[in-house]
Length: 103
Image 1 (tube, rainbow, N blue to C red):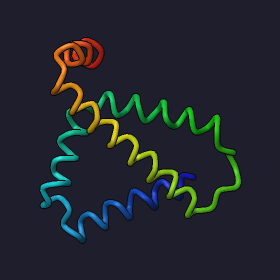
Image 2 (image 1 turned 90 degrees about the vertical axis):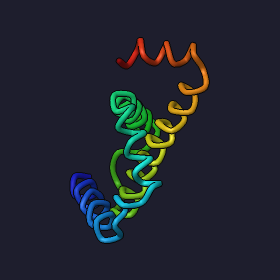
Image 3 (image 1 turned 45 degrees about the vertical axis):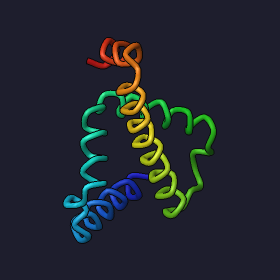
Image 4 (image 1 turned 60 degrees about the vertical axis):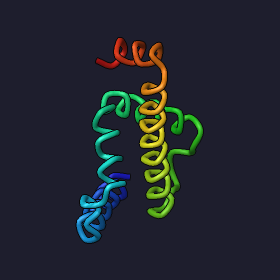
């Protein structure tokens, strides 16, 4: 799985650089959002990976399946950060709870 993780990291970095994704407003928004909620993203990511190890068989995945699982975890993590951003911005109670837990 280490080879898959390194390959995915390389492909994401190279693809982002080649397509100049850093210059696009949507990507910039995602970077800011995940950066604002980095501790939450880290903990969510760990919890999600632990849940997946209980569900998925640990051996026998090829490179495409490993990349798909990694992309799914990344997508779920970014989606959770976006959801937190919306909920915290709309609810004073949730904003207070979030600040207590993560700041």
